[in-house]
Length: 135
Image (cartoon, rainbow, N blue to C red; front, side):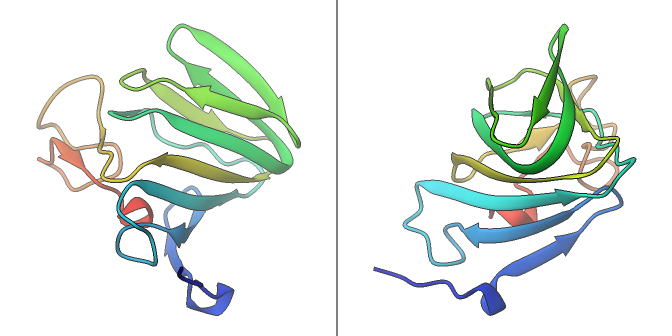
């Protein structure tokens, strides 16, 4: 059994949000599940990307618009969104939100529009990366 104290949680600031690593293989996890918190401020707009593992997003506070494949979902505090693997997605918010996300450990994110032109969350030329908040 492992206790990851809030003060020890790893925080990653991106241009769009703050990701707080709660449990992953490199931070108290067993190697099978990654759990992180997303705090996106009002007016936030994440990049278009896809993940090669299913992700489950539970909104704790606020609201989010999720472009998922060919559809658009409007989610609010208390809602949970299940995002299938390999489906393009973009998360935006007008008023800001906080969510907890769970996914299989080791999942990669990538640019669904092409390989090698810079992953949505990685350096130019990267095909797929494990984001630092999920590693």
